[in-house]
Length: 487
Image (cartoon, rainbow, N blue to C red; front, side, top):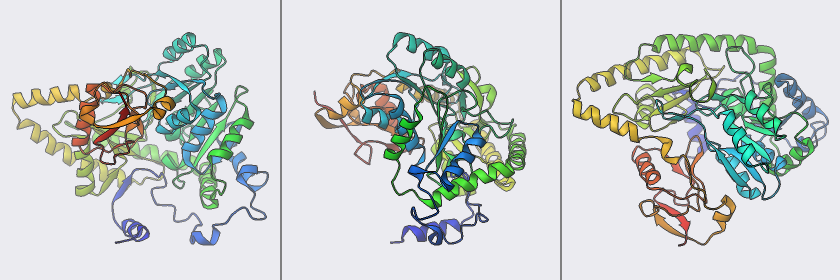
């Protein structure tokens, strides 16, 4: 059996183009890291301590803080996950109450579980044309804060994995009017704020705690991120206390050096790199504007759905006007055109583009999409009216709406503690889930422990599995058996 290092080295020799994270796109050969073992150290003299930074690491974090105009910034070497969990713990009490956007990453739900929080959901708008989540409406946040004055904090995701940006500035204003801190999972927006062609970051828009994955959309190693702390609602020392709990006590100096290198690139080369990036995106959209069957998400498609802006670096390519699904398009791009996308959803694929992408990558992708689009258009011309009506029916049913308006019977931690039994998905109708069920990527739970499982949810999960999408969260790796509360 081939070992992992061999497989990685062999993969590195291929010509597969990476429209996926990490944002360095395997191009930072000039980073100065030639032999990682030579510089893989621990907290020795002269190299500071991440959990008690007062020397070179403190200076590095202060550099990041200045770049993002935050009051305080800390390095994260356990990814945005550690930042999200630390943020939630720092602003809530045990068994407290959190207002959380339902389309939050599983890391937020894991914090809720460990903190034994009661969740109040706020749902994003739904963009049915593309089958994806829109933005969070500020007035919905306000309504819940009025109804539930004991809510301790608000947690939202902006941008989403697909690049949909909520009106963070207005949401922050609403939260602060009630004296509540706003946490923004900005994992997919670490590149915001460095060009007027891209949205402002949530630090500039007034959020109290902002978590950004530099590895997702910037040139940094996988697992690297930042947490920004702002304002006087959040106690900085509490965040730092939980960072010391949720981050490893042996932080990797390779990862920290990677973040520092990334900050140097932003400091010295951001104008040039973002200019080139914007030109490449303009070129790509110009070349794909006349697609007939495939459709690429545009800002105009999202503005009516609670969204403030769209991240231009996220390319959502829809197959809803065809008889194919997202998994098919992802495989077609990989096996026929040697392009690896970030993820496939039921009705679209997602490409993550960054400042490190080359024009040849955009050229390769647009040429592939144009060829595929022609084939799909020919295919659609050759089907009869009956088959077209069947496709329209499938499109109408194939939606994430099945998972909206969840019926919460128990809090997450209470559901996890219930006596449970194992049943097949088809037998789980009206039962209370004791497990998470999620599509991965991006890692947003479709079902959370404590929620009642509805027939439409089961039907949709079975469809996703048939389409080859990855259903995770259940102990059963095959995704056929789910643990539910005993009756």
